[in-house]
Image: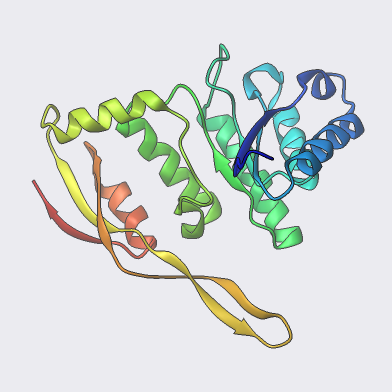
Length: 219
Protein backbone atom coordinates (compact mmCIF):
# COMPACT_ATOMS: atom_id res chain seq x y z
CA UNK A 1 0.00 0.00 0.00
CA UNK A 2 2.82 2.38 0.86
CA UNK A 3 4.32 1.69 -2.55
CA UNK A 4 1.09 2.75 -4.27
CA UNK A 5 -1.01 -0.42 -4.56
CA UNK A 6 -4.66 0.48 -5.09
CA UNK A 7 -6.10 -3.05 -4.76
CA UNK A 8 -5.23 -5.74 -2.22
CA UNK A 9 -6.42 -9.37 -2.17
CA UNK A 10 -6.41 -11.10 1.21
CA UNK A 11 -7.30 -14.71 2.10
CA UNK A 12 -9.24 -15.33 5.30
CA UNK A 13 -8.15 -17.96 7.83
CA UNK A 14 -10.47 -20.87 7.13
CA UNK A 15 -9.95 -22.30 10.63
CA UNK A 16 -11.99 -19.41 12.08
CA UNK A 17 -14.94 -20.44 9.92
CA UNK A 18 -14.59 -24.18 10.52
CA UNK A 19 -14.44 -23.68 14.30
CA UNK A 20 -17.25 -21.11 14.32
CA UNK A 21 -15.01 -18.39 15.73
CA UNK A 22 -16.75 -15.52 13.97
CA UNK A 23 -15.32 -12.85 16.27
CA UNK A 24 -11.79 -13.95 15.33
CA UNK A 25 -12.71 -13.80 11.65
CA UNK A 26 -14.17 -10.33 12.06
CA UNK A 27 -11.11 -9.09 13.97
CA UNK A 28 -8.77 -10.54 11.35
CA UNK A 29 -10.66 -8.93 8.47
CA UNK A 30 -10.89 -5.62 10.31
CA UNK A 31 -7.10 -5.65 10.79
CA UNK A 32 -6.62 -6.31 7.07
CA UNK A 33 -9.00 -3.46 6.29
CA UNK A 34 -7.18 -1.05 8.58
CA UNK A 35 -3.76 -2.06 7.20
CA UNK A 36 -4.89 -1.45 3.62
CA UNK A 37 -5.99 2.10 4.28
CA UNK A 38 -7.61 3.64 1.18
CA UNK A 39 -6.83 0.63 -1.02
CA UNK A 40 -9.64 -1.49 -2.44
CA UNK A 41 -9.80 -4.77 -0.47
CA UNK A 42 -11.01 -8.10 -1.87
CA UNK A 43 -11.63 -10.82 0.73
CA UNK A 44 -10.99 -14.32 -0.65
CA UNK A 45 -13.10 -16.84 1.25
CA UNK A 46 -11.69 -20.07 -0.24
CA UNK A 47 -15.25 -21.37 -0.33
CA UNK A 48 -14.23 -24.87 -1.42
CA UNK A 49 -12.61 -25.32 1.99
CA UNK A 50 -15.44 -23.97 4.18
CA UNK A 51 -17.44 -27.18 4.41
CA UNK A 52 -21.04 -25.95 4.05
CA UNK A 53 -23.04 -23.28 2.26
CA UNK A 54 -24.13 -21.97 5.67
CA UNK A 55 -20.46 -21.31 6.46
CA UNK A 56 -20.08 -19.55 3.11
CA UNK A 57 -23.03 -17.27 3.92
CA UNK A 58 -21.76 -16.44 7.40
CA UNK A 59 -18.19 -15.85 6.25
CA UNK A 60 -19.48 -13.55 3.49
CA UNK A 61 -21.46 -11.44 5.95
CA UNK A 62 -18.63 -11.23 8.48
CA UNK A 63 -16.13 -10.17 5.80
CA UNK A 64 -18.48 -7.43 4.58
CA UNK A 65 -19.23 -6.23 8.09
CA UNK A 66 -15.50 -5.93 8.74
CA UNK A 67 -14.96 -3.75 5.67
CA UNK A 68 -14.37 -5.87 2.55
CA UNK A 69 -15.07 -3.99 -0.69
CA UNK A 70 -15.36 -7.25 -2.66
CA UNK A 71 -15.91 -10.85 -1.64
CA UNK A 72 -14.25 -13.46 -3.85
CA UNK A 73 -14.83 -17.21 -3.99
CA UNK A 74 -11.27 -18.47 -4.14
CA UNK A 75 -7.70 -17.96 -5.24
CA UNK A 76 -8.35 -20.23 -8.22
CA UNK A 77 -5.86 -22.77 -6.87
CA UNK A 78 -8.13 -24.70 -4.52
CA UNK A 79 -9.48 -28.14 -5.44
CA UNK A 80 -12.99 -26.62 -5.65
CA UNK A 81 -13.32 -23.07 -6.91
CA UNK A 82 -16.29 -21.00 -8.07
CA UNK A 83 -19.62 -22.81 -8.42
CA UNK A 84 -23.13 -21.53 -9.10
CA UNK A 85 -24.55 -22.72 -5.72
CA UNK A 86 -21.78 -20.91 -3.84
CA UNK A 87 -22.26 -17.84 -6.03
CA UNK A 88 -25.99 -17.78 -5.27
CA UNK A 89 -25.29 -17.86 -1.53
CA UNK A 90 -22.67 -15.10 -1.73
CA UNK A 91 -24.84 -12.90 -3.97
CA UNK A 92 -27.76 -13.21 -1.58
CA UNK A 93 -25.48 -12.28 1.32
CA UNK A 94 -24.43 -9.19 -0.64
CA UNK A 95 -28.08 -8.34 -1.33
CA UNK A 96 -29.00 -8.74 2.34
CA UNK A 97 -26.06 -6.60 3.42
CA UNK A 98 -26.99 -3.88 0.92
CA UNK A 99 -30.64 -3.94 2.05
CA UNK A 100 -29.56 -3.48 5.66
CA UNK A 101 -26.75 -0.93 5.20
CA UNK A 102 -27.13 0.67 1.78
CA UNK A 103 -23.50 -0.25 1.04
CA UNK A 104 -22.69 -2.07 -2.19
CA UNK A 105 -20.10 -4.85 -2.00
CA UNK A 106 -18.69 -6.37 -5.17
CA UNK A 107 -18.53 -10.04 -6.13
CA UNK A 108 -15.81 -12.01 -7.92
CA UNK A 109 -16.09 -15.70 -8.83
CA UNK A 110 -12.63 -17.13 -9.44
CA UNK A 111 -11.40 -20.44 -10.82
CA UNK A 112 -13.22 -23.06 -12.85
CA UNK A 113 -14.83 -20.64 -15.33
CA UNK A 114 -13.14 -21.37 -18.63
CA UNK A 115 -15.93 -21.06 -21.22
CA UNK A 116 -17.88 -18.03 -22.40
CA UNK A 117 -21.12 -19.98 -21.99
CA UNK A 118 -20.25 -20.66 -18.35
CA UNK A 119 -19.59 -16.97 -17.81
CA UNK A 120 -23.06 -16.14 -19.12
CA UNK A 121 -24.63 -18.29 -16.41
CA UNK A 122 -22.91 -16.21 -13.76
CA UNK A 123 -23.92 -12.95 -15.44
CA UNK A 124 -27.57 -13.98 -15.63
CA UNK A 125 -27.56 -15.16 -12.01
CA UNK A 126 -26.02 -11.85 -10.97
CA UNK A 127 -28.64 -9.87 -12.87
CA UNK A 128 -31.47 -11.86 -11.32
CA UNK A 129 -30.16 -11.68 -7.74
CA UNK A 130 -28.58 -8.23 -7.53
CA UNK A 131 -29.89 -6.26 -10.50
CA UNK A 132 -28.21 -4.47 -13.41
CA UNK A 133 -26.12 -2.15 -11.21
CA UNK A 134 -23.93 -5.13 -10.26
CA UNK A 135 -23.15 -5.82 -13.93
CA UNK A 136 -20.72 -2.89 -13.87
CA UNK A 137 -16.98 -3.69 -13.48
CA UNK A 138 -16.69 -1.80 -10.20
CA UNK A 139 -18.98 -4.43 -8.61
CA UNK A 140 -18.39 -7.61 -10.63
CA UNK A 141 -15.34 -9.28 -12.13
CA UNK A 142 -14.30 -12.73 -13.27
CA UNK A 143 -11.16 -14.30 -11.86
CA UNK A 144 -10.60 -16.72 -14.73
CA UNK A 145 -7.58 -16.21 -16.96
CA UNK A 146 -8.47 -19.20 -19.16
CA UNK A 147 -11.80 -17.55 -19.99
CA UNK A 148 -9.97 -14.98 -22.11
CA UNK A 149 -8.63 -17.70 -24.38
CA UNK A 150 -12.13 -19.02 -25.07
CA UNK A 151 -13.43 -15.55 -25.84
CA UNK A 152 -10.54 -15.02 -28.23
CA UNK A 153 -11.36 -18.30 -29.97
CA UNK A 154 -14.95 -17.18 -30.30
CA UNK A 155 -13.78 -13.96 -31.93
CA UNK A 156 -11.50 -15.86 -34.29
CA UNK A 157 -14.53 -17.65 -35.68
CA UNK A 158 -13.91 -21.10 -34.18
CA UNK A 159 -17.44 -21.10 -32.74
CA UNK A 160 -20.52 -19.82 -34.60
CA UNK A 161 -23.02 -17.19 -33.56
CA UNK A 162 -20.89 -14.35 -32.34
CA UNK A 163 -23.22 -11.64 -31.08
CA UNK A 164 -21.99 -8.06 -31.11
CA UNK A 165 -23.63 -5.76 -28.60
CA UNK A 166 -23.53 -2.11 -27.70
CA UNK A 167 -23.04 -1.82 -23.96
CA UNK A 168 -21.08 -0.15 -21.14
CA UNK A 169 -22.99 2.35 -19.08
CA UNK A 170 -22.08 4.16 -15.90
CA UNK A 171 -24.21 5.01 -12.86
CA UNK A 172 -25.72 8.48 -12.89
CA UNK A 173 -25.37 10.91 -9.98
CA UNK A 174 -28.17 12.78 -8.26
CA UNK A 175 -28.06 15.71 -5.86
CA UNK A 176 -29.56 14.97 -2.45
CA UNK A 177 -30.24 17.93 -0.16
CA UNK A 178 -27.97 17.91 2.90
CA UNK A 179 -25.96 14.97 1.47
CA UNK A 180 -24.64 16.39 -1.80
CA UNK A 181 -24.08 14.30 -4.90
CA UNK A 182 -24.90 10.58 -4.60
CA UNK A 183 -24.66 7.64 -6.98
CA UNK A 184 -28.06 6.39 -8.18
CA UNK A 185 -29.24 3.09 -9.64
CA UNK A 186 -29.97 4.77 -12.98
CA UNK A 187 -27.43 3.92 -15.67
CA UNK A 188 -26.29 6.44 -18.24
CA UNK A 189 -23.31 7.15 -20.46
CA UNK A 190 -21.88 6.65 -23.91
CA UNK A 191 -22.37 3.18 -25.36
CA UNK A 192 -19.41 1.31 -26.81
CA UNK A 193 -19.04 -2.11 -28.43
CA UNK A 194 -18.88 -5.27 -26.32
CA UNK A 195 -19.10 -8.91 -27.37
CA UNK A 196 -19.79 -12.42 -26.15
CA UNK A 197 -19.70 -15.80 -27.89
CA UNK A 198 -22.92 -17.58 -27.03
CA UNK A 199 -24.96 -20.48 -28.37
CA UNK A 200 -28.39 -19.51 -26.97
CA UNK A 201 -28.40 -15.69 -26.93
CA UNK A 202 -31.93 -15.06 -25.67
CA UNK A 203 -31.12 -14.91 -21.96
CA UNK A 204 -27.96 -12.92 -22.45
CA UNK A 205 -29.72 -10.41 -24.68
CA UNK A 206 -32.31 -9.95 -21.92
CA UNK A 207 -29.52 -9.37 -19.39
CA UNK A 208 -27.89 -6.70 -21.52
CA UNK A 209 -31.27 -5.17 -22.27
CA UNK A 210 -31.96 -4.78 -18.56
CA UNK A 211 -28.61 -3.00 -18.27
CA UNK A 212 -29.61 -0.54 -21.00
CA UNK A 213 -27.71 -2.12 -23.87
CA UNK A 214 -28.90 -2.49 -27.43
CA UNK A 215 -27.88 -5.00 -30.09
CA UNK A 216 -25.69 -3.41 -32.74
CA UNK A 217 -25.58 -6.43 -35.03
CA UNK A 218 -24.62 -10.08 -35.34
CA UNK A 219 -22.47 -12.23 -37.57
